Length: 250
Image 1 (cartoon, rainbow, N blue to C red):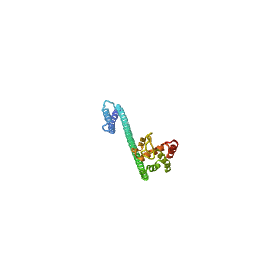
Image 2 (image 1 turned 180 degrees about the vertical axis):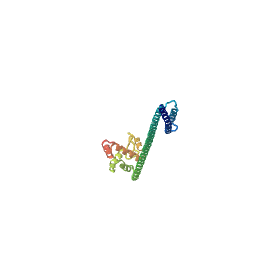
Image 3 (image 1 turned 90 degrees about the vertical axis):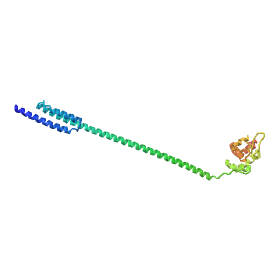
Image 4 (image 1 turned 30 degrees about the vertical axis):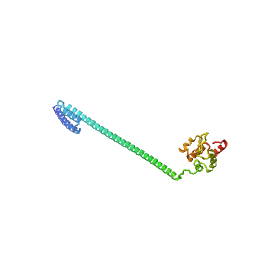
């Protein structure tokens, strides 16, 4: 019996030494300065100094402590792995967000550049069209011969103006007797009974002011108004002469 007790004491002592060695090794694997490492080391130190336990209880305590250390080590490694995964995910999300912002900025810059290019092209087209219109107008002005003011007798002036109203010179054969009958081609001819005045016998004479302010004494102004009246009322001098011959007035 004494021999068995001696062997148990020896085993317990060996277990205690082994426990102390295991505690040192386990503490070395924990992160330096970590709260968990400090707490575990403190707990294990307290366990080692529990002298009130029997050798068998100390062996049980050693196994329990070693199992707890293994669990805590596994928990720490799992937490570290989870933290690493979370950090990698955060970095990936940040990279994706930065890439999306960069793509959006590039797209906006491209759209702005395209709009500016389109506006420049439209402005260039409008400027080119305006220049072309100006050149065409200048060419037309250059191509058209300068129209000289009609001169000569009232009959000569009237014959020169016929083409301005789209009539041929043959219309003068009707215009000449028409106004010869109305006024004798006299720019100052006045009808005392009706108030008609001038070569075309405008009624009243002030109507001819629409052709020029000098209507009272300028043959060209009176003739221009008279031809405009004939065109608007009868269509041609010959048609007006036909009405004159039929009704005695035009």
